[in-house]
Image 1 (tube, rainbow, N blue to C red):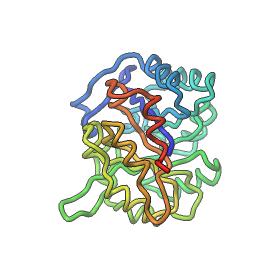
Image 2 (cartoon, rainbow, N blue to C red):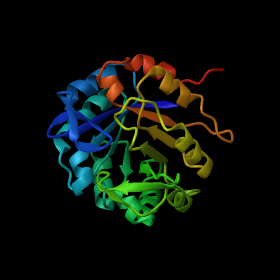
Image 3 (cartoon, rainbow, N blue to C red):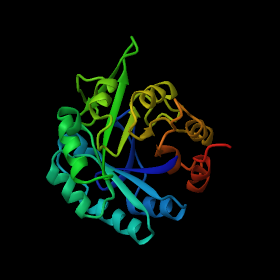
Length: 252
């Protein structure tokens, strides 16, 4: 399981939201400084999100993303980015700018075939983001437009559309747990692993090294998670990147 330290961008700063709420934002300063710290810790990936772009569909943080990509490239680190990736031209621009993989969210929910077309055009470089909420009856719904609107589609419905196709990965984020540091949605992630053969990257809720270890040990029908995105716990110094990388290795 690979570690993806997260840098969320808004207004030129590295920030974190609680449960995707833009009114519950905490700033963590210069995103390039954060990126350099993560890179120095030995990560092989960075996960960068343009938060305002996720809502509006217009890229807001291009300058910061370009700086992060440059620092990452100097150190052999790959960047996965999302937020505002709505068209094939958006995908092309991001990849031409040095990003290793893009995550399509709202556009993929509204037009699942668009994600497939982009994934076919750029093999191994296009992932889909499934940011979800769980209803009282246990059903899941993928959210769109910066988590502010329901897509009207369940996770399992969407996964069936992409399973067996060219999509490189699914980034599954529990909105209720995101930024809360209370642990990941193990049950939800287990259901996602069971429902698809696409590599799954977990996101939302990691607060301790034990949370990462639990994800590394998760096995469903012989399959493990491909990665875990960790944001708030790292920028708040609850543990170091080096420790997180070590925790990503499952026990023998």
